[in-house]
Image 1: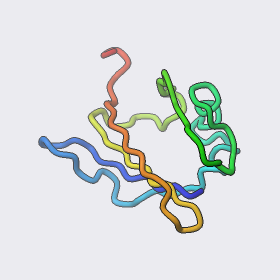
Image 2: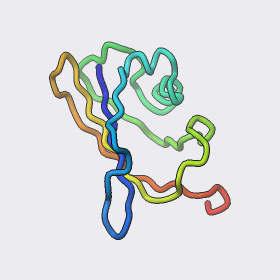
Image 3: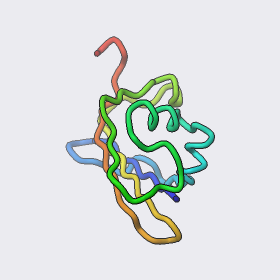
Image 4: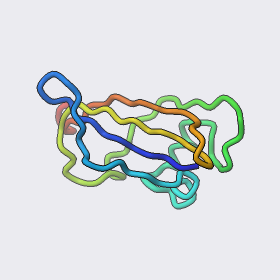
Amino acid sequence: MKTSLQTWKFINNEYRNFTPITVGFDLCSALKTNLFGLAVIAKEYGNWTNCPVLKGYYVMRQFTPDDGLFPPNLPLGQYKFSLTFNTHDQFLFKLSVDCVIKNRKDF
């Protein structure tokens, strides 16, 4: 399963493309290597832990990201992430996530 990620940052009252490129990666390989803690996240907060992904109903609950798994000094602000999932060049689904990155002391 291939995944592509696009990122937008909220600037001047609208979301603007934040990265000039679209990042692509193989989701199953990312799970095997625990990229960004994906394997742990899928196991602890969801009901999907392996590949291939079978037809079914998948959930994720009560997840809070571990800031230690992400690059340091991420720019603060409001973001939108769009993940597109494909297999064998066939579109499966698209996931959009809105989030805010703020300093720990602001929680």
